[in-house]
Length: 571
Image (cartoon, rainbow, N blue to C red; front, side, top):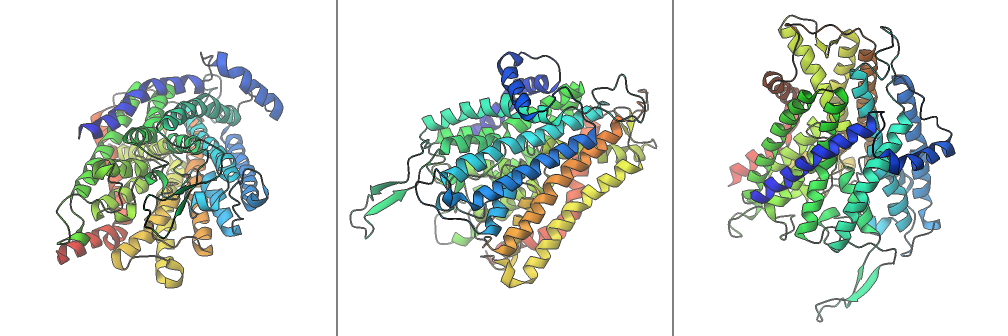
């Protein structure tokens, strides 16, 4: 248990100074990092014709965000289709089908990295190290940019002191925020992490696959092909950027992608480092340290409950081996060198964020741990993805402020700005959205066996389908593997869920922030709702749990709960 505590506490301690650094680079004020990075950024802005001094209201900011995603997505789709004719393809990998290329491009564009392909077998070095890794740097920075804009809006925008009531507010420059997120944050951290992983034995080469003799001389197969590549660079940003898409099909369960206990610790801590730092950044940009403490307490409480439940679950024996093996933890689908505890911790953290990377197969988890992974994705705000996770957390905060305001008989307001009909209507849409997408498509897919492609019967088979759509909507990317998901139906239906689950939960909060920014600030009084205390924190946690419980309880009964009861009956 000491190892588990260290793997959670170390990134939390590192997140504090990192969050202060992120506050500085997104504050719009001169910063010590300007000396190193400003010349490069200025050159990029001159080449692209962008005026970094130009402010944007929420509409301009949102348009820039969507336009940049459209261009990147089209470019990635075309390059993936043409990979067999492009350079850096020493193993002669052939082209992808159009539906798989589309799904892969959209999946990485949305910071999801849901993989319906096996990387080392179906993608060239160019596709992996140029196309996908570029998206792995840019897309988390896009989410971080939206988060910074939303936080500025909650403070009235950068022109709050001079703007009139109902006047559009300056939420920053999208392109400046995007470039700073990549150049000043993700690139330096990924460089250090890649060097650490390469030192542990993760491959970092553009040589083709290597052939070697097998260890068992009596085997009919005398030679083994070992695919290589610039793996360390991809794994570093895979983990730091809450991306999750690995070089190899088994992801970080593969010994080349995660060879040692040290590499496993580095990769585990990298999952939550920046999401935790965003919480500290939020308090800095809002100039409310108490809000950071409240947010950390709410997320930390939910995270600890999930981690404890997952580890407890995986310490129980696997019911499938009852009477066939010695009693012990559930090691099905796990690397013995990592064990049950480290695998359960990773599974929990990777679904509390939008990472989705794995060092064990989630399909083999006991029902309670499988429920925990689904719950983390459905909440999608326990740390969450870079930027987008805290935006989702703010949605829960706004809803809680509204409900608490009604309970005390006051007009709901946050930081002196009223939450009114327009904001509540938009928040209501966000509450209903995942239910419609996930439950609707799960029901349709399960009803048509020819489309389903699941490898398990009964409750677990339903859970496989539900998990896949949940993973797509939450921009997570992990899966209950065994699902036959490389089909036109799965590729195209997941593309729809990926797009809806990424853009509406980012653009709608941006709209709400723009609306709040224009409002007159009411003076603080004895009747004002205070967010920086234990009462609001517990109310917020309760609202998060109730909303998800009411929305997905029936689906949970047909999945992990039903499976657990079924297994208990057979024991």
